[in-house]
Length: 60
Image 1 (cartoon, rainbow, N blue to C red):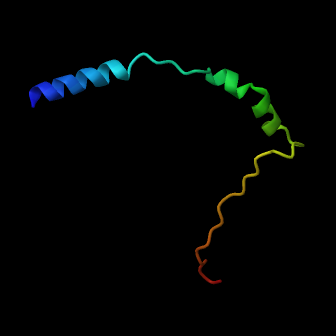
Image 2 (image 1 turned 60 degrees about the vertical axis):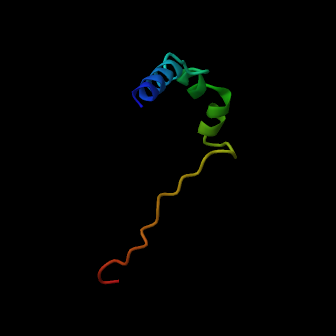
Image 3 (image 1 turned 135 degrees about the horizontal axis):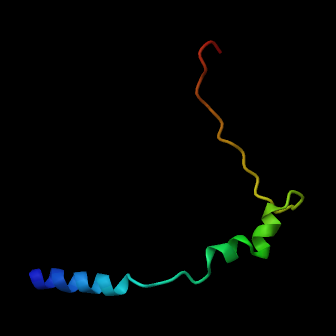
């Protein structure tokens, strides 16, 4: 049982470390696709509607 725990810990330690992101976050934020979504006149702009409060208000 101990050997199984030791082997699994070693596999997890070697498999999970030292990886970098394929693309840096600043390159994603400054990419052309994100700039199109940020434009106010873009038809692809993400529209956010705040959540509606469906609870009954007192006195309504």
